[in-house]
Image (tube, rainbow, N blue to C red):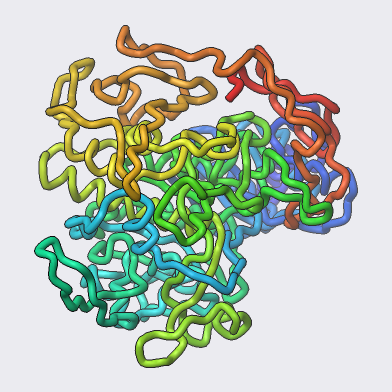
Length: 601
């Protein structure tokens, strides 16, 4: 027996020693771990360890020998989560069976702003997204809302099959609750019936008479969609990346059983590493490969919190996931017309850290939206000015702004798209096609660049019409549009042309690419990767000039621990869009000029 102990000890020393991390090993660590190793301010760190294929059990054995418990396993991304000393982190970085070691970063919900005026999600959609009184309701479409939970009410029973799973506790199905309130608000924007706000209205009919109408004032975009609430955030609106990864993998594994078509991620953390090693990004990409549309918020870091200057590169993870639909915010000014729409300063701009990806993909209404409040939750208890009364005079709604709300509105529109498509065709739309349709039909806002608005502002009318006109059963490389589609949407009497572009990676794709069943739209292709497009696509290498200099407000704030941009002195003072691509430096110190992309619009 003593011999066995000696062998185990020897194995531990040989394969999991405490040697200083070598140069190659440094490339396996994110910038927060590199900071911790340099400053030695932390005794232990929560980490996510991605292993080489087939080596997860071997690495787990090494941790066990060291007396370290594995707190979680993430099979879809070949990863383990654990709490380790810094010496153990160094050793893992030098281990050839380990691909990367990432901080198990704290994630937070992306909406804590409030204002005195308000608008509901469905009112916002009907007023500004061009669909009118849409017959689509999201019926039989399932949306996994990975957030702080769900407080049920008569407003949130439209799907009739709504379910709840708590990943902060037993990770099993349990009675729904939301002690923070963010998840309920997001779920309500997507699928609330607005029953508690139902009131009588008088409207003019087409027959010239005045009619009485009983309608909800505050309702979700897709009131009959099924909500599958996966709780990952606590009463303070915070949680760990590993918990979110667990929830995403659960959604993938139970996609068919629970009927999950969409994942909404209105949360994030500062980007600490490239997408190739970011565990949260890899989980999102796995979900898209499984056929799930993933909608993420861009983040609320469009301004430096110390200087209040508007800046670029504030997109959070998993908004940097290439295949995710990353959404920034629009302020509709509570009007139907789009001519007065603006993008709030808080909405995060691209490009993304490390990979310099063009994000967000589009923007959507997210400012001053009213949705369901979770009773006795943190947001309800601490934000009395945000509460809105229902028809019985009781405060049952909550007013918030942020890209969290924009993501929720977009998820609701995706539900309407999928419903419309499923009524017309048996073959489902792949996630990449959904993203391409949203981008192609988006309506650009004047005076905003692509790093601020992506392809433009969400256009539900165009997206729904395209979704119900595309037949994925058509052979690859064939025209899959089954009929003519007008490339304009009428809003408040104005005919607004669609942007008719798709941003594939860092290149604008012009032409009618969305009308063809190209390999690009396959769910097995990572958005932005090199593919053969064929002759149907015109590539745009320069739009509006060869170079645009953004000046000294364009950049990135430093990151300290799990806090967000808190360094008042940006490490790069100018972003130049030129003819070459240079990624941002992998740390808080970098060049004073960053050359980014080959597009100038």
